[in-house]
Amino acid sequence: MSYSKMKKLELIELIEQLTVKVNQNKLLEQELMQIFNTAADGMRVIDLNFTTLRVNKTFLQLTNTTLSQNIGHNCYDVFKGEICHSKQCPIVQIKNGKSKLEVEIDKITADGSLVPCIVTATPFSDPEGNLIGVVEDFKDISERKLAEENIKQKNHKLQEANITLKNVLAHIEEEKISIKENINLNIEKTVKPVLQRIKEEAHNRPQLIELLETNLNRLSMDFYHKINNYKLKLSPTEIKVCQLVRAGYQAKEIASLMHIAASTVHVHKEKIRKKLGLTNKPINLKTYLSELLVEETSKQ
Image 1: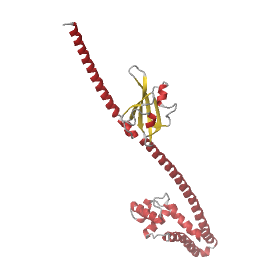
Image 2: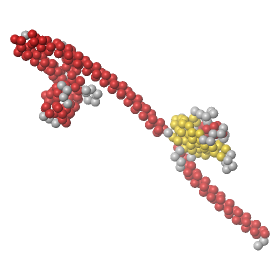
Image 3: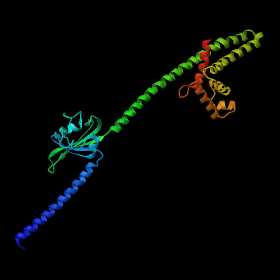
Image 4: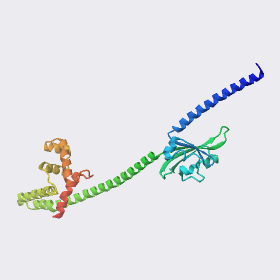
């Protein structure tokens, strides 16, 4: 074989090898572009002059822009933020030696919408290792921010509810003290004088005992009169339940005394609370019923 023919064969073989490598590189580039475009985060490549070289589909969706609005344009014109044109800019920091940068910041789209993001910036180098730009990754954290705000609002409402509950409990405690004082006052005014007279006038004991019984009944009757005229009409059974609740009996004890089921007692109590306007209010029924008697007595 002649020398020229050998050279020609070698050249053809070399071309074939180069063609294979070119095809392999094209395939690799296609695979990389597919990965780039299907990434969950928005991504773009920027050169050292702040010019956008490449963006993925997620970035276009995130910024609501087109490919032509990005390629060849300055990065700060498309998706700007408060650190643009400052020393905190990722490109500036990477040019100054930063190997990686991550920052949480609000970015502004071309239509003025605000998008909270976590921005991760890494160097973009050529095959020789020379820095030629920056790769930026944008993770949209709008849902996380919304969830944080919802939690913040719920915590605020919970704090307000706790304050309200504390105030209600403090008011109930004050009412308890007032009720005790009024009960003691009523006893001093209506019961103790009769007891004293019983001690002093032995011959009039039957009449005085009857008077004592009348006064005690009056305390109870004042209560019944009050609940029957408090913008409601309670049934005889509900009035009996009110009497026992006010006297301090629990549901099981009331059920035993009235010969009904404990669940029926709870039903009666719920109906009573509804008629008294106490449904969904943090007010103790026993305390409220006791207060009715105090209010009636204080008017006399």
